[in-house]
Image 1: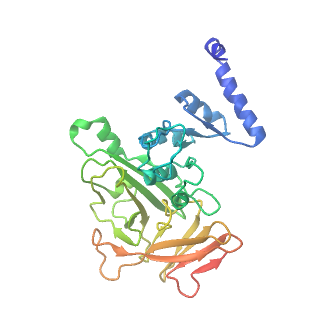
Image 2: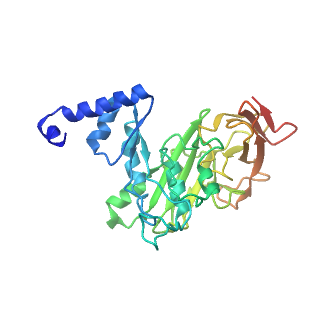
Image 3: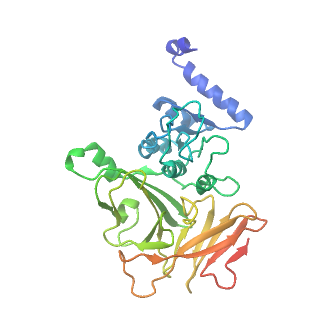
Amino acid sequence: FRRGVFRSASLGGDWLAQMAAGAAASGVSIQYCMSYSRHVLASTQLPPVTQARASDDYQPGNDQWRPLGTTALFAYAVGLAPSKDSFWSTPVQPGAPRYRAAQSEPRCRLQAAVSTLSRGPVAPSDGIGLSDAALIMRSAAADGTLLSPARPATKLDAFLAADAFASDGAPTGEVWFADTAVSSRRFGVLLAARVSAATAVSQAQFGYAPGASVVAVEANSTHRFTRLGAGGLSLPPNGELDFRLWNLAPVERNGWALLGEVAHKWVGVSPARVTAVDASSSGGMEVAVRGAAGERVTMSFAPPCAGPCAAGGQPEATVSVACELPASGRALVRAPEGASPCAAL
C-alpha cells in the first residue's frame, strides 16, 4: 500500500473514503490520529470523521497539552473536535509497564481541564483502582455525557501575537478561551497557565461588547465571584500547578447572572447540560437543565448588587441551588430558591 500511494494520485483519497464508508455502514465515527494537514482537510468530505488528535503522545509529566490552544483553531475550522491524548488522574501509578519507575504526573487537574475544554474525548488512562473519580467526573454528567463548551478553547489573539513577536516584551502564556451560547446569551471559560508576567484581558478579547456587564468565578474559589471592570480580568503570573480557570457570564437586566455548575464541573454552562435560560423582569432566573434521572445538579448564580455595584471591587458571595433530576432527566432550576427551586419538566 505504501508503494501504491507514491505511484497514484488518488489511492490515498480512495483509502480514506473507503474507511469512512465502512465506518458509516457500521454506525461508528473516526478519529484521525497523528494526521497531516491534508488528511484533516480531506475529512471535510467524510462525515464519519468527527475528531482528530491535536496533541502529541502523552507521557506522565510531559507538556503535550500545550499545543491544543493553537492546533484546536485548525481542527475546529474544518468541523472536527481537537482531541488531546490520554492522561493520568492521579500522580503515581505503580507498575505502569510503559513508563519509568519514578515517572509521575504532577498536573492531573490541568490535564483534566484541558481535555474537557478541547471538546474531544476525555481519556483517563489510569491503572485499575488508581483513578481519581471525583476529578474525572468534573468533566462529565453522572451518565458519562461530557460537559464541554460549545467551541473548543483556543489561545487568545494577544498571546498568539506575543509568541510570534516575543521581542516586543508582551506577556506570554497559555491563555485560552472557549464559549457557549444558550438562549442568546454568551458564556465563557478562560484557562490561564504559564503566564510570564501580570497582565489583564479585556472584555473585548472575550467577544463581549464594550461596557457589557460580566461576572467571573475562578475554579479554586467558586463560592465567590467578581464583577469585571473597565480593566477586564487580571491575570497574575503563574505556572502549571497553579493554573487559573474562570467561568464568565453576562449579567441580566434584572441584575442576576448564571454561573452554572462551577462548584463541581470545569465548564459551568455546557450545552449538554443547560438547554434554556430565562430572566424574570420581577427578579430571579430560570434555567432548564438535563441529565440522568436522580442526578444531583447544583447551579450557582451571581445575585444582584446588595448596594452600589462596584465593578472590579471585592469578590461577592454566589447563590447555589441544588436540584435532583426527576425520572424524565429534565428540570427547571430557579433562583432565588423560593417555594419551588426545582421543577420537573
